[in-house]
Length: 90
Image 1 (cartoon, rainbow, N blue to C red):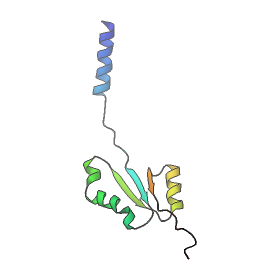
Image 2 (image 1 turned 90 degrees about the vertical axis):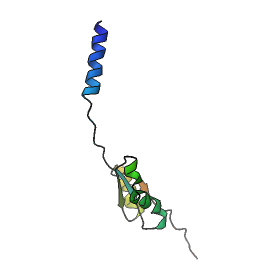
Image 3 (image 1 turned 180 degrees about the vertical axis):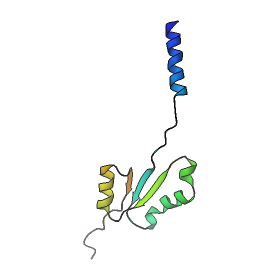
Image 4 (image 1 turned 120 degrees about the horizontal axis):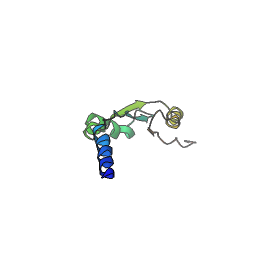
């Protein structure tokens, strides 16, 4: 009997005391204005992120060094960068 009452108290505390938590936006960095990042912009403009309850913030940072630093520091969750140009070009 005691365990039933304790179980009931725990269930009530878990389900009644539960409040929805506001999620932080998912921050995605891209490093160039190019067609390579088109799917990100199309997905955002089409509203697909919101359709699946994702709060996405697209951020532009010029250069891979800045985007890598933002990713390592935890300021952003994803970083899309282009591959380096092969040298020499001639």
